[in-house]
Length: 246
Image 1 (spheres, one colour):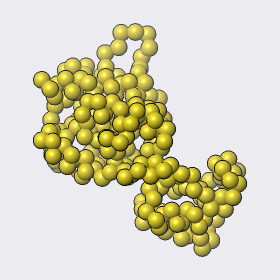
Image 2: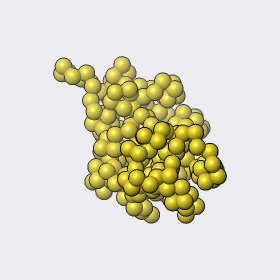
Image 3: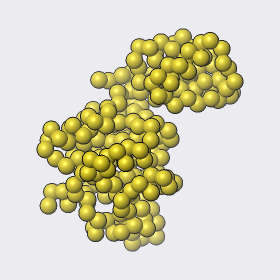
Image 4: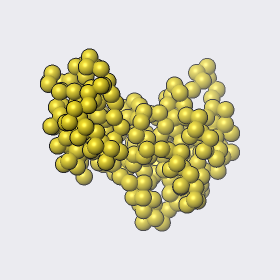
């Protein structure tokens, strides 16, 4: 199911967007405003577990395309999100060991799109992103994915660490990309696998990293000490594919 990407402005418009079932990626409300319509929006946001950003009027004015935001601006996803259970069901249907990408701190839509493209190419069963500090399924992501967003499902969760612990009970183990880890050729990337990728600047957050079972490093011989997040994801993903096909 596809949604048109939208910027939704105005209290009634935002409220109706929630009630109509649109997937709201981001919600910005005027800080300090607590009148009836804003409280109604907050109730809907809570029902849908939507992250709320309270910002100044100046910030809302910057975000507004119409100049009539009335203290409320929402961004609706261009594509619908999947449930993690759907990703696992896709692997089971194919008779394959589940292979997921977990993205931590990936806020650049071009990186997310490129990773989606790689995930599709290596046969991953889906991508998982957190609700906070993550690029959503915008039209820019769809373009960068070269259409992969239509075939590779993306699930959005509140807490990556909690998800990892629940998936470990299903036999998953998690490998984190880290320059100080074991050389990737020496890491077993078969079986039910979650490949954890962090941003180029900050890497994987401490708490998520603590829930990983192993760290895998990409050999580097040049003067540059790191790779773009989407490139690193691609290198590790193809090593995983090589091992899983062997």
